[in-house]
Image 1 (tube, rainbow, N blue to C red):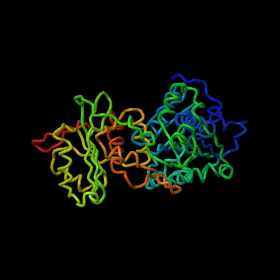
Image 2: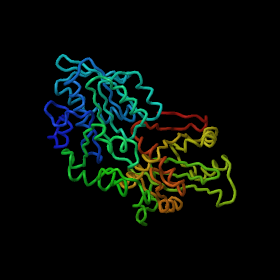
Image 3: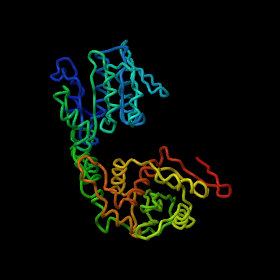
Image 4: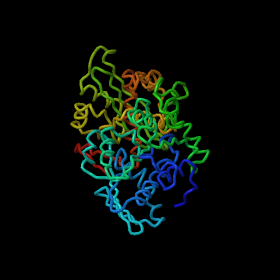
Length: 424
């Protein structure tokens, strides 16, 4: 693997703990800032080298939001480099563990995902000499504090990195604002601190985000979200006509409601772009009459019009409607992923990159884009729960179908004569 010379801040991360460093007395290092700023790779490499400079036959933890993100962001990029440097690595995938050896020393690295409050139980009872917490702002406080509590060996240290979130976030308040009290070295990164990032790629990232997310992920600021959720969708040219083509695939996304509006979107795939080509939107308050699950199902069939829909994704809380779709056996139904803030980031990127397009005939989607706004209460970090039903079903589509295409997404084919599913 070819590595470009490290930047000044990357070199600080790589050497802060070394003998003779002006920073060696710190108990922790915190790296935050812009996306793609080069902080994760140098931190992971520095962490492994540090462990062998201080310990042998010892245990450490490498944590991220999920095990998958630990491997993708941390271990997979650095293992080839370690091997080129002369380290020997044995990976036990089922045990989520690495055994790393170098010049007669061996240390064990356990991999953990801290996705929710229950994750703290995974790390309880361990004795660690150090922990690396990647994407720490995405992990629950209980898991992070449990991981830190495991580091009871003399000389143990904490390693944190993250992209910014809102300024009321517990990690910002308890660690970054209190870095002196915590005896933590704080290093703020921008994209210019990553020498492997070209000017063209840097400009691409600058164009991907707007508003608060631009300030967070490009400028690296801990800032509150405010204003319109999708401010770039305020022009007529943000929307398109339905392409006059034969679509390669079809899918449907559903945000289900009885008292609240129900919004279903029909999507067609053409040349790598998913178009929202039609929609069903029923507001019982406006219409003066609620619809049953079966009536919404008939509306779903009218929207599909016999087209070969591969899969329907639905609001995971809509258990009764999901069961109705399953009982009829005509379509394949999948509960949607429902992470709001992360999903909004994904939708924003997909719209700006042109991976999804909204057609003008989807009038309720067009209307909601102009009205969908962030809740500006301090620390709310969520949109106002109004004018959000088409917005929710679009988010379900992006997080559950678009982002999983070619990875862990299932392709479906239905044998409608037998009302069964064939999964490839």
